[in-house]
Image (cartoon, rainbow, N blue to C red; front, side, top):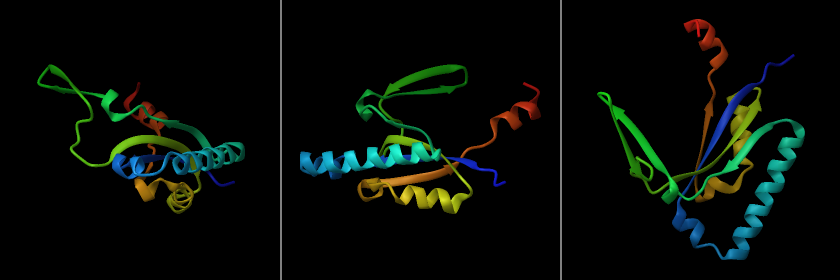
Amino acid sequence: MVRLMKFLLLIYIEPELLQALPANEYDVLMRGCIQHADQLQAQGTLLLSQRLQPVESAQTLRSRQGQARVIDGPFAETREVLAGFNLIEAADADEAMRIARQFPWSAYGSIEVRPLDDLDAERVRVGA
């Protein structure tokens, strides 16, 4: 039996590229993406998928030397912003990348494919 790994597909977009799309083209793109996600979820590959609120609604918490500071918006200075994520299970990184390629968003930014660590193993390791 193949032990599946969990991967987080972080969807970054360049807002200007999406805003340049006519509304009906965006709707077709989003409808296709949602239908594809539904298929992956029915197969058991997609565990969770969520679109994020616009970056303007974000706040970033940073703590240094016992002082907490909250700033509006994301901390990173970049043209691309985190727009959503997909939590998937795949046999390996190659399969996770194959799944990521099936989503259209890399044409409007990028999709970061990152394996999740085993938090239960870390919990045991540190005695928590």
